[in-house]
Every structure is written in C-alpha cells, then in structure tokens.
Image: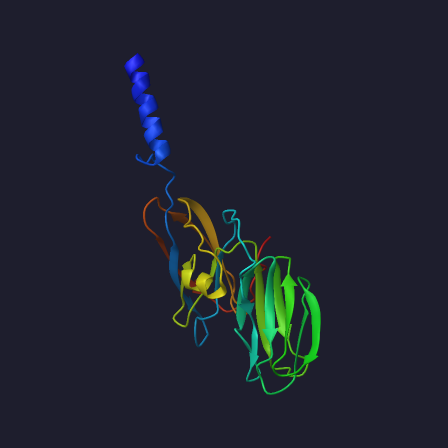
Amino acid sequence: MRSIIYIYVYVVMLALTGLILLPQKALAGEIKGSIKAQGLRSPANIVVYLTKAPATDLDLSSAKFVLDQRNLEFLPHVLPIPVGSTIVFPNNDQVDHNVFSMSRTKKFNLGSYKPGESKTVVFDKPGIVELRCDVHAEMAAYILIMKSPYYAVTNKKGNFQIPDENYLQQVGLKDLPDLAPGKYAIKTWHQKLKSQKKSITVPENGDVTVQLKLKRGVPSVLYK
C-alpha cells in the first residue's frame, strides 16, 4: 500500500513539473463553410456568427476598427465588431462628409468634417447600426455589434471561417481559442437576405463544414 502511495505522489510531481502531460479537455477546431445567395451578384459581406458563444476575456485595448470614407463610399460596407469596441471614421475622400445613425442600437451624428480628419465612436450595446451621410444620400454601411468575437464575414466566393484568424490579426485582436467540442447554433445576417439559423456539432477532433443557401428577404434581429 505504501509503495502505491509513493508511485502516486511521484506521478503527481512529474505532472506538476510538466514532465508528464495529463489529459486535458479537447479543443476541437474551426467552423468552415460556404454560402450561396439568391439574387446577389456576389455572396460577399454576409455575417455568420454563433448565437451563443463561449465566454472570452477579450482585450479590446489594441483593437483597430476602421470604417473609411473614400470615393463616396463607406468601406467596408459591413463591419462586425465585438461589443465595447471603438470605430475610427476617417475621411479619406476629396470632399466633406458627415456620418450619422438613427438606429436604436446607437444614435449619433458626427457632423460635417473635412478630408484628412477623423472621428471616433464607442459601440457599447449589441445590435445593428445603419450608417448614412447626410451630404451624400447614396452612401450607406452597416455595423453589427456582436456579443462575442466568434463571427466571420464571407469573401467574394461566399466562404467563411470561425474563428477568422486573418481578420483577428488585421484588427489587432489576440488569437481566439478554438471551439470546444459540442453543439452550437450559427446564424447569418445580410441586409438583403433572410437570416438563417442552423444547429451544428463541433467534433472532438477536426473542424466542421457548413453549406448554406440564402434567399432574398428581410433579415431578422441579431439576438432575441
């Protein structure tokens, strides 16, 4: 009996020093997928996100979210951000611009400002914000304030990946941990497409692949 206790203590000491790796909870991987969109020239700018995501201690202090004004356009057209983030609105055009929102999620009016100037806004509530410019009525963009950073935006081919490592590096966020094995629900948003919600299961080993087909219509709210 005494020898068994000695062996147990020895194994514990090795584990504490890192010489033996004890089994840990598996972290699976990523959600990868593609979307086909009815009636659109390109399936780009579709936001895909987890409706209920794992809690993360996300440090937003180094994040750099920019929504540019250039050639009489807001760029990018759709910008999802984690709640609590700050967006910089530079005017890199040749004319004056004004950025404002009448959305319930965040109402603001930055007033008219000249080329080379920039202004900032903090978005502290989840939801959707539609941007406009009262100088140029044709300009519009959408900000999606997300409850978690587990989201992605489709590229021109309709492909997406959650977590999106390239996006995280681009905006200066730390890498997110892969999703733990289990059941999740993903949802889509695009201003001209009906939102779709789909249940998925992330396996213990490897990634999960999703294919979606979206129809034209009015999108639903981000969260209920």
